[in-house]
Amino acid sequence: MSQVLSQQIETAYREKFSTSAKLYERGVSLFPSGVTHDGRYLQPFPIYVERALGSKKYDVDGSEIIDYWVGHGAMLLGHSHPAVVEAVQQQAARSTHPGACHELELIWGEWIRKLVPSAEQMRFTNSGTEATLMALRVARIISGKQKVIKFVGHFHGWHDLLTLIIDTTNSKLLSWAERSTLPSLNWLIRHLVNCEITAQNSSIAVCENSC
Ligand SMILES: Cc1ncc(COP(=O)(O)O)c(C=O)c1O
Image 1 (cartoon, rainbow, N blue to C red):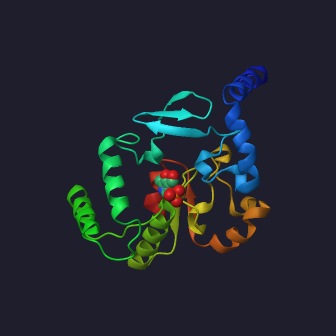
Image 2 (cartoon, helix red, strand yellow):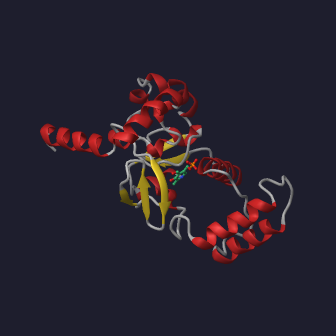
C-alpha cells in the first residue's frame, strides 16, 4: 500500500473514531500498550465499544460495526442473547461467587463431556493462558518429553513457554542467537533454549521429526 493511501486511511480512521482516540489517551497512562488485552492493540488506537448485540458492536462514536471477532470466538450465540442474559441475571441475584461446590458445575461438566466425549475429566480455567499452561504441564509429565513445538505467529497465552514468536510482523524463524539480541527477551531465551522448537505454520515435518 502506498504511503499516501495509508495516510488517507489513518486520517479517515482518526476522524471517524475520534472519541476512541481520546479514551485511548487515558488507557495509555494506565495499561501496557494502553489496552487490557494485547489482542485489542491496534495502531494508531483501538476502537472503544459501548455495547454489543447479536452480531454487531456499537462504538462510543455511534458507529455500528459487524463483529467478526465475537468475543475471541466465545460468543457463539451472539452478544447478549436473551436466554444468556436471563440466566446470568437470575444466577447473579442468587450468588456472585459462593466459593463452594455447586450443582451447576456438575451440570456444566456433564454437558462438556456430552459435547466432547474425549474429555473424560476436565478442569475449568479463567483464561486461555491458564488452560495452555496446565495442558503443557500435563503433556510434559505424561509424555516425559521436555520440548514443545510452537508455530510462528500463533498466540496461546502469556506464560513463558508460549510467549516467544507471537509477533506476526516478524514471522521469519529467528535462530536462538538472533533472538538473544532482543534485549527484552534475553532472560526468557536463556530460560527456554532447551525447551522450545519453533516451526513455520503447517510444518508437519517438524512435528513428526522433533517429537
Ligand atoms: C488459541 C489461543 N490460546 C490461548 C489464548 C490465551 O487466552 P487468554 O487471553 O484468555 O489468556 C488465546 C487468546 O486469544 C488463544 O486464541
